[in-house]
Image 1 (cartoon, helix red, strand yellow):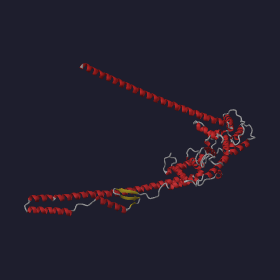
Image 2 (tube, rainbow, N blue to C red; image 1 turned 180 degrees about the vertical axis):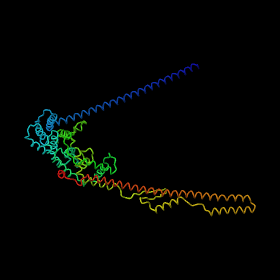
Image 3 (cartoon, helix red, strand yellow; image 1 turned 30 degrees about the vertical axis):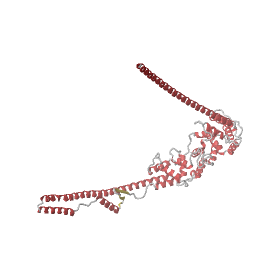
Image 4 (cartoon, rainbow, N blue to C red; image 1 turned 90 degrees about the vertical axis):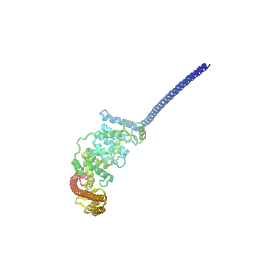
Length: 519
């Protein structure tokens, strides 16, 4: 019975183990399946979100396209758009040397492009000039700036000098911002007209008018402090690619640069300027005030990098202030010589005053001094005429105090030695020979200390004397160096004066007028 019971007990234990192992396996399997299920669910959720995002993106694009299309259809309903489309077609054909006709478009009240383009196209196509003046005057009444800039661009692009010169003279009377750039700034279209006018491409009358106009816009004697600093920096760093040269070198380089502006002749065959073609394209493409809100909304929805932003034409962008542009023309080595010559005439008083200010402060006239220092706060100031004697005496006293030149006392050493000798004699008289010998030997101690003290004193004295000598030698060396520095400074000052005079000889004493220049 015992064996059976034991067998049964062992069998139960094996069964329980098997059951436990099976439970563990089932538990592990369940956990793995649960993890796989969660991972699959997570991946599925991520896929759903990605698909949802793509759907939202596509939906957003579709909405954008629908909105843009709706705005486009609204734009097509404008009479200005229809007229502009036909005008653009005629100008493109004309520019490409293809057969072209003047478009038969109805006038749009308040829109300047229709009368201006119709009149100019009929002129270019030689289809009659009966309504030319009427059309141009109507366009000027509706928008004088765009109408004249349009005439100028057409005149330049299609070789119509009579229209070009009239348009330039009228635009020169307008504010240089052309009504669109920030106040005080020069619009890019006005700047382009400035560059071509000063080169003589629009006739002598336009050159004279430009000179008078710029003189009225730029007060060389009323320049603000920050602008004066910009002029100073341009003068100091001229010809050095940003690294300041020495004053004489910079002034001589500037004088040579300005000599190239003397006696400039207008260019006989100017290079084609693509800006006028771009400005003409922008003027034709530019929406009317009624269309502008729609065009701006369309540009916000979709505007490729290479597409013209018709609501913000480049001819209206700021090119800088009048002062900035004149300074650029004057100092830029790549600027046209005619622009440099005009800038020199207009900016002469300012340039002369800044050169004189910089030259006056270029080299100091104050005496040069150096300070010779020693540890412990000892200082002596030295100039080309030497040093102050009182300072040197004070420095030497300070060095003496620090050296501690006191030696051992002779009287003390003699007194101690004599006392030891007397005690040794007395000990010998009383027969205490051991003590007498010790006291006699002890006499050597004060003698040794005295001799050592004298040796230390001699060494300190020698070091002190060397310090004094070093100080005086340094003072003499620094005095000679200061003298050399002052001579070198005088030489630099003389060179700076010569360079200044050389530069001022190139700069006119006052800004000459256009009439004086031509005469």
